[in-house]
Length: 257
Image (cartoon, rainbow, N blue to C red; front, side, top):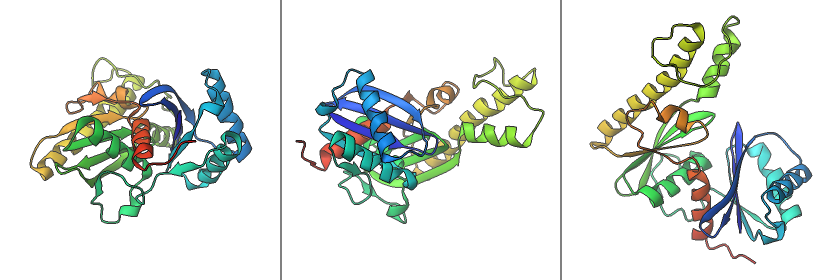
């Protein structure tokens, strides 16, 4: 079985693949841990899913939080006895990175693009809803062009509440109308309908730049909340990043013992 880990600024997503099937997955808070804590954490997750840790014969990680990389790599090595492959542009990606400075592309954006092209073909736009909202653009030839980055939903909410003492904290649910009739509904409308409009506006500008429409996929923990109010998002694929990690591991021919 293959252990896949996506370390983000807010959440860390962990999954286990049995062949091409995603057997188990978890979405956790990203926190600083020692290698021992990471190892024990992973062992406990595996056991809650009735997965024998000895059945893990490979591991791969995508991370945008460098201070956490060492603890994860060491924890996996120490407690699972596996060397963890780390995603970078040095790997055989199966796609061309057409970014001005390829090494600046976040590992999560690379993995999304790899999985997106494999599942949905090209051209393609992938909207990933995490700490930031990232739009990733792949052209008809399968070249990763770049995209756009905007503040994520929770990031926007935290900034709003942090600077407005009287505003109440809210559940991330859409009101029945874009015209909020209470302060809570007004904030909900601004966050959800506003971010749906932001994504739609960016996607249409991307289409104009490409000279054609594309398939638009959404992924990430908050993808469903926004996609329900978007006019351009066609499909929500919440575990797309994990699939990309599996594809990259297999593509790079790492032997499993």
